[in-house]
Length: 560
Image (cartoon, rainbow, N blue to C red; front, side, top):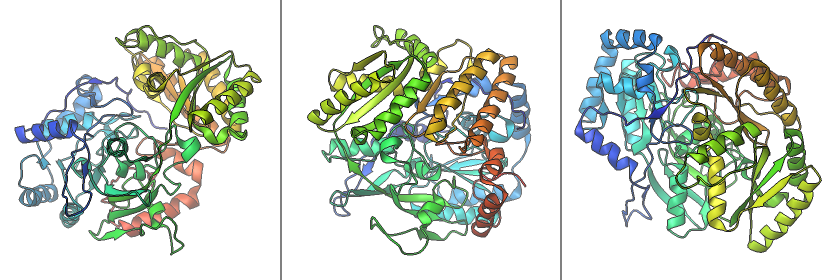
């Protein structure tokens, strides 16, 4: 694992634009809702809010901290003084002629440098934070085709971006001469098929924006994968997303994406399959692009399956240790009540301390306090009768595994607040220790191995003197260790702890990434996890579809 400069602490900052039209465009995007066409005749448009920041918190930047870093100073000066290559200059000139409207093409060096810093990366380094030479905003598949053909003719690399919530540098520049295709203006819902429980939209629409539109229209359906708030559906597909709902609804690979419209490196447009909810016709090419991270083509439209939106409630259960909590979850999911559990999340005692600290700083939740113990956040779905029956069964089961206390939400408002405290895990961790920074991990192991791995991580962190809150999707074996550090000495320990966590996960037949993807940060683990033959086959597919490596270079595939 190569040495990278320490990751930098994030704080809110407004993105800067080179002209008033771009600023107005950003303002429009941040305050609106998804565009929606019921039919071609109606032409009704609803704008989507969606330029969000990393993970759970929207619109965060690290520009000011980056400017204080020695390594970044060198990068900044070298990039500012370097002139674009003739191919890039030609490509930008051609793009300006195709997209003459203000705000459709950004080329100002200061804006691009600031934009590079807004990417919330699990690993910050010069390779993972190079600015793009330009950012272009298409509004249709046809626009993307034009951009791809221009870049192909000029031999310029392309980096697609949805909402910018990725944690592994998926949308960062790695070549120093790339053009970013920002899909955030491609956010129109094309058609909602209520009778068939599916929906077709452009790739820049966000999953939670789509769900909000469905809710406002009184359509009792939703897209259930529940990844990072504000993340785009194109990005969700490209990184094989999942989230807390995975224990009930699975991941992006579970056919929630029925089909995708993709622009290949050649400029050709393909649709991976039709809208039927099952098909045995040839390869499932939708699956080929799931997890490909924009390296095989640019997803411009998706058709997604929807699930019935059921009433839910929330319960919190506290345990003496992680082992008891994990054993309780195993018993719950195998019981007859397991089918009514939508989410079951593990948070350790260190995280509960961080959460209480965060709540103490809140105006609305200042009086809320939770026991400092290993805790399960459980979301139950179904009718009120079903919820009550399930809660009774849960209480009986948890009592057999040392549950010290259980708290059930008293109504929808309290349930939303309790679940919001789990959803706000990352900002709570970031604000826990003043002056600290965080390195987050994303391993996943078979559920039967989860408790032992979490315990090992806790022990290793304690021995190293590193504060390490843990949150995880205990129902599917995926968890995030948030390794907190405050100085270079602690950063060295955190880097080593992260490596050991991944290696131990692989030893337990697990994966280096359960839901964040590979990006730049985890390429070195791909061969140890998948084997040389599998990775070489992936490269064969990549080289066949993208022979010049113009599509999101420097991501996913290990270096030769």
